[in-house]
Every structure is written in C-alpha cells, then in structure tokens.
Amino acid sequence: MEDLRRRDFLKQTALVGSGLVLGQYLLTDGSGVSKPALALVSQTTAEKIAVRLRVNGANYGLRLDPRVSLLNLLREQLDLPGTKKGCDHGQCGACTVLVDGRRINSCLALAVTCDGAEITTIEGLAKGDQLHPLQAAFIEHEGFQCGYCTSGQICSAVAMLQEVEQGTASHVTPDVRRDGPIELTDEEIRERMSGNICRCGAYPGIVSAIREVSAAGRSSSI
Amino acid sequence: MKPFAFTRASNSQTAIQAVVRDQAAKFLAGGTNLVDLMKEDVEQPNHLVDINRLALTRIEERNGGLRLGALARNSDTANHRLVRERFPLVSQAILSGASAQLRNAATNGGNLMQRTRCYYFYDVAMPCNKRQPGSGCGALEGFNRMHAILGASTECIAVHPSDMCVALTALDAVVQVEGPQGARSIPFAEFHRLPGDTPQLDTNLKHGELITAIDLPAAASAFAGNSYYLKIRDRASYAFALVSVAAALDIQNGTIRQARLALGGVAHKPWRAPEAEAVLNGALLNQETFRRAATAALEKAQGYKYNSFKVELGRRGIVRALTVAAGEGRTA
Image: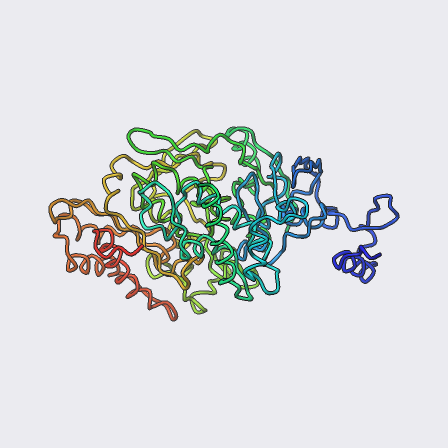
C-alpha cells in the first residue's frame, strides 16, 4: 500500500465513481484488480492494429485501436506517466518524447504509426539512480516550479543539444547558408526550446540549466 | 475522435488505390495537423492510409535544381546542406514555423496540405463554409484579426497557415503528384486555391492524388545570395504569421535583375505578388523602389474590422524584407 502512487489512487477512485458507466468495459488482467483498458474507446472500432515498440529498452508487442495517441499509450497502457498531457494539441510540448532519437509531440502521433520505433521517455534518461546531466541541471538551476512541463522540457533539451551537435540551424541562426558549428547563445536556446511552454515561467532556470550542460559537454569533449 | 480503419501502405500505388476507394479516406503522413483536426471532429475520415513507410523521403539534385521528397520531414529539409546553400529562403521559412518537435514530425507534402487555423473552422459549434459549406462564415463579422486581406470572398476570409509554402511559391516550385490517372506536375501557384464560393476546397488536388515530391527549379538558386523570409507574429517564436514576406533578389551593379515576392498570413493561399515584382524587375536597388513595390503588392488589399492593420504591416514588412534581402540591415 505504501507503493500506491497518487495516479493509481486517482485511477481507482475514478473507477469507483463512474463504475456504472465504465462497468461494461472493465477488463481484468487476472490479478483480481479491474483496470480500464484502452478498450474504453475502442468498442466501436472494427479492427485493432498490431504494433511493436521498444520503449526505454523494453520491447512491447501490442494490438491497438488506431485512435490511441503515443502519449495515451505511454501513460495509460505502458504505465509510464512521466510524459505529461498538457494541451493534447501540439501547442505546449509537455508530451515531448524521443522517437528514434528525435523529439516529437507524442500527443499528435498515433501510436500505430510508431511500429518498429525506439522510444525514449523521461523515465528512460537516468542510469539507475544516476540522473541524466540535464535532469541534475534542472534541479540545480531550479528549471521548474510546478514541474508539469519538466519532463517535456528535459526530453526536448536532450534532443536539442544533439541537434546543435549536428550543426542544425534555427530561426535565429545568423546565416543558414553557412555550414559549421552553432554558437549556442541564450537566444538560440530560447528559440530552439520554444516548443515547450512553462506556465510558471521558469524559463531563466531552464535556459541556464541547458547552457551549463552544453558548456560542460563541450569542455569534456576537448 | 470518430472510429476509422487504418492501413499501412507499402507503396504509392496501394496507398492511392486505398484512398480512391473511399471518398472519406485520407492519407496520413506526419499527422501534426490532421490528427489535431480529428481530435476536434473537424476532420472525420473513415479510413486513414499511413504513407510514412513510402520511399519518398529523399532530397536530391535534379535538372540542376532540387527534388524534395514529399515525406522528407520539415526539419530534415530545412537543414539539408543543399537546401541551405542554394535555397536558403526555404530553410528560413521552414525554421520560422511551428516548433522543433512539430518540424521533426511534419512532412513537406503535409505542409502543403495544412488547413487553416481560423478559429471558426476549428470550432464545430460555429458556422464555417470551409468546414460545412453553406453554414456561413463566422469570421466575416466576427473576430477576424488573423484573417485575409487579399483574395478573400464573402464565403471565407481564412488564411493559409504555412511559411514553407510562401517561400515555395516565391521560388516557382513545382508539385509532383501521382493519382489514379497517373502522374502530373502542378506549378506551385496553381496548387492552392482562392476561396471563391467553394472554400471547402483548399487545393486543386483530386481525391486520391498523392504528393510525391516538390521540385525547386535550378533558376531559383540565382536568389541564394539575396533572399530573406520575414515573419511578423504576436510572439518571437512558435506562432502563426500575422504577415510574412518571402523576398528574393537577383542583383547586378545596383540594379535588380529579377525579383520574387510572396506574402503569408494574408490570403487563402500563399500569395505571390506579381505587381510588386513588375516594379522591382529592372529597377534601381533602393528604398524608393522597395516602397513602390510594397504599395503595388497591397493595392487591392481590403481589411476587415480587426485586421486592417495588416495592410500597413504588410507594406512595411515588404520594405523590411527587401532591405534585408538586399544585404542591408541584416539582423539575424
């Protein structure tokens, strides 16, 4: 019981509260605990689609309603609620995850289109108890207040630093014609992170956390 | 979201056939717009045909120009070495739109197929001739700050949201499509439509036609040294344009040999401004020329209650973009 997480508690109380409505869709996994499956919305759909995914190093073989977003799959079915649902319309970035190493909004990706993909979420960044450098830097620089956007911010920043390493230009890069290393100014960081909104306004801390990790990466690679 | 059937297509022909069979079937590429619209019940396809596995992701040289695969991601296109070198206007335009996450998912073909962000189109409780022909236009007498000032009709004053397309129309890109009747090429200016009395039609694509590539002609690389995409919006990043300007100049000895000018955020389609180009072509490279071009570009502009500011903003934006393209006052 001490392991009971807030989310499980909310899920179970919600189920009790709406048991009459949900009852006919409840599935059991044999553990004696009823839980809502994705099937909540799928009963009118003709055909489920086979999907194979690798998430944070674990392989999954699934059959999914094609309407399920990657975000809902992660949170509701794979028990990875670290990825957050903010706007659910690709406008806030809270749901940012890495798909085959690239950052995307998981709310706008139908999970069935991710067949064969390798996905990394916030849960996959730390190595055991050792935080990813960006996770540590966000704590150090107070890159958050309420924390709701943070997993999206950090996943986004991980990919963003790789994009900079690859020399990708941004809207504020002085001359897109010139190939070569990008100078990661604060203006560049802000532009490249503009797809991640923070309603608490922790942007100064976010920028300084990213700046520090970027600078450390450079010095360690010399 | 309404239920739909889902098919993964392995080649263009099977994808096209699957869509042709059902009037309510659609191709699914990056999904950044379509999935969003499906969540809002604005789009309600019976059948999605996933084309993400088709071999249409390459960006390659062709006839001295570049062929951009329809399924190359916006981010890969913007940062392709040859696009940055020869068609920097395209890179700049793409990079000014959306966010890094969205550009990573969104495809070139999908960028052309984006639907308007008009609030009345998105809100299924409001009238909208584009979403539901004959229901009226909520924007005409409503909150129309983001709306069209050129080429609109009483049926629809929505604007096309793309930045990339503004650069593509300026550079005379050509859209390659395949359909049930075979392949054809569509000049960019003829790809999107003005609303007229059929605002439900955004483009001249027929049902079942699939965009396979977008060609940038060799001649357009003449502008590589003097082009600029200016985007004016309500915040510094990650917002749709109020007005945007794609300006491209080919300059010789202080004279404009040829010019291209296109506007975004002002019309139902990416707006090419031939009247302005006529002023610029052969003229002396100076501010007076730029001002005359700006006046010509917006001569037929008509504002509505909340967006009349766009007319003057457009003129000033044109002068600014041409000034930067000419190599003066470039500020990142």
